[in-house]
Amino acid sequence: MASIQDRWRRKDPVTGRLVPTKLDGKGLRYRPQFRDPSGRQVMKAFALKRDAQRWLDDQTAHIARGTYVDPGAGRLTFAEFYADWSNRQVWAPGTVLAMKLASDSVPFADVPLRSLRRSHVEGWVKGMVSRGLAPGTVHTRVNNVRAVIRGAVADKLISSDPSVGVALPRRRRASAAMTLPTAAQVGSVLEAAEDAFRPFVALCAFAGLRLGEAAGLRVEDVDFLRRTLTVARQVQRAGRGAVEVRLPKYGSERVVFLASGLVEMLAAHVATYCPDGGWLFTGAGQDPPHQNTVGHRWRTATAAAGVTGLRLHDLRHFYASGLIASGCDVVTVQRALGHASATTTLSTYSHLWPSAEDRTRAAAQTLLAESCGLDVDWRGSVGR
Image (tube, rainbow, N blue to C red; front, side, top):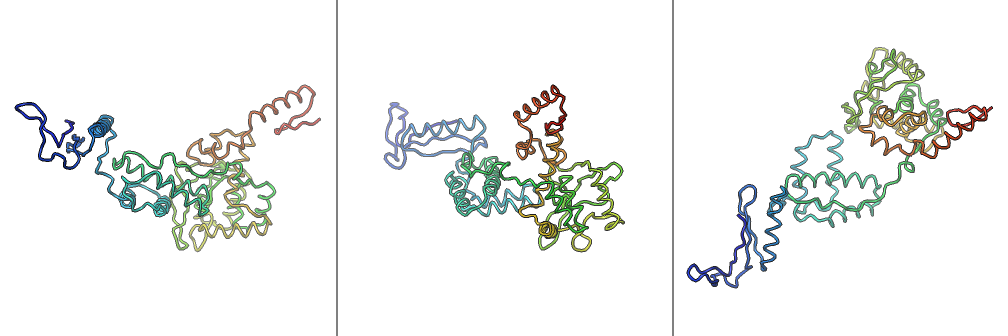
């Protein structure tokens, strides 16, 4: 039962009047106390009764709402909590590295969780921006550290997340940050690429595969009769030139429908380089190619083609833009690219879909063409 004890006065059992105690004038006068959900008695001293009552009301309200946090909790530092919390998480190896990089970068590693303030997080963010880190990098690190703090909140070590509301640097709009190669550029790189690497480039440009997904393909993943390709694994770096084969990113397992020309290119590649099956592409020995190996081959091809400023991943954007230009809806593009949700697709490529103004102009152009006996192609152009 909650109560407030007056340490300086007590009621005389005979007269009922308040009389001084042995502690009269010593220390803080009022001591509120209650039992927490575990049955442990919790108390704290205050000089003023109104402050004692306010604290007691706040603690009992948290108990009623189920948000109570032991006032003595949170003694663990951020680093100590992360070491324990991270060992309990089910993460892919890439996530382990990203989380460790973020947690090691905070200047408040030795601050007890209960002393962690919004100002600590703001100072950390300001420092990253001042060092010139890209806005996307800052967002990723803050989100990773925020996951740790939310873990502390869930464990009831702290009552709230001090990172909430911290201002982050603006990221560039997708339309400004994205590089879309032209069809001529893609054709030039394909022509300049060495024979064994050309199908790799084609799979990224005309099937939208990520680097790791293309590197992880086996001959049996291609169904030449049905003209489909199954994305069932990916290749990731494992350090010191080694590679690790694992499942694709969450939601990225998929069947990709291939163009006839791409199927023919893959068939010729298999006949020449891997007639006995196995990995579709190889790096050192018989292992699938390492990211550095693919990067070297890509830079060699783009240099030979005279194309600058183009990343291999930009071919994935090229593929997506082609699907959208051909009238594919969001779900179709999502499934083709292996996005976990349509939200990811929209946030990345929404600027490529026709706007209401574009559709209005196209509809008006169609009406004009039909009325005047003109031909209309898929771009809305007219001709006699």
